[in-house]
Length: 202
Image (cartoon, rainbow, N blue to C red; front, side):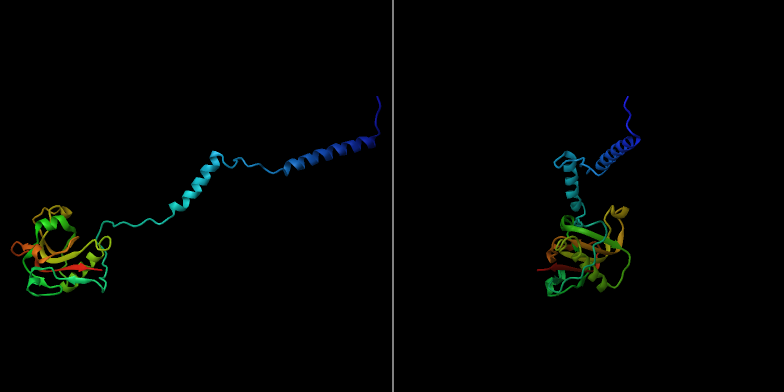
């Protein structure tokens, strides 16, 4: 057997070790191939999901919710007419009258909101707030007329009412214009000191 000098063994070992180190370095720095190729089902799902995210963050129009309408001042370019029966006699603006109420068929068809409460505040102030609630109800022009009256019968079922109770104060909103001809005589002692207004806005 022919033996190589120790120096040659050492050089051969260095060459082999250097080659192995270079191979390890190449494998260590080899770029990692993407797991999902363009057009693959997984990639398409990611793209679709990312495109939907902005839509989820988009604002959603608000819809009217339960509760009293907001008090929205009536614009100066709107006109308020007095629809109460005594307006036939030449009265203009929002005035008061006793003993008249909207006809039942009109109320059933056009009443969109009714508030029955105790506090008998200043009538002029309450009438103004009732009209402003009409203006703030739903979308623009959803409410067309409002009526404020005292000693108004509370409808059966209103917050559990049996239907034979009377409210000290009531604000009624309608989606149609009140007219003097739409009023009928109210039961004795009901609908006292009422005011009403129909709101016309351009």
